[in-house]
Length: 127
Ligand SMILES: [Cu+2]
Image (tube, rainbow, N blue to C red):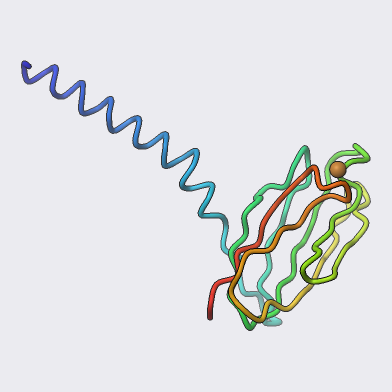
């Protein structure tokens, strides 16, 4: 192989690695909730054809406040359910709805629409 071919091959491999990281690994890693003034771990979640972000990382032992902002009128997403913590809430279009819970130990928990079609998850990490 000539040097220019090696460079092109390496650049191609680098691009593939970047795409894998960007579309799978970065997405799987999720978004970390931010600790706000009142001590809650907060994250804003857009509800539109799904949940964005759909993976949220929080620390155990600190209360969490998910702020759902629904920007669609599809009936599918009109309610959000967080079964492991016994929480659910109606999501009127265009309104920010808080859903609070206290994660006490590490683990993964799912939140969904009432029919379980839209899915997101909360990854609780040991403090
Ligand atoms: Cu649904």
